[in-house]
Length: 92
Image (cartoon, rainbow, N blue to C red; front, side, top):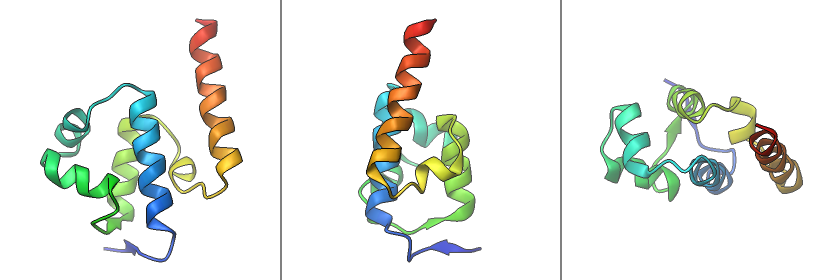
């Protein structure tokens, strides 16, 4: 199992949290979907635990985003994604 360790884990954790909040999902909801405890999930968002590529793929699937969005280290690109998502919601 490959571990994501050199890819700015704080940024990845922050992206996960922001998308979760944007989707209005709770930590408990994501934890249940991932089959882990809420405490374990919280550690992912706080960057206290290392995340495997497999876990990142699972998180991206639950959040409904491409893995590349979770790994986006360019803040402007990430915010542009959130803005586009919000525009999609407003058009419905």
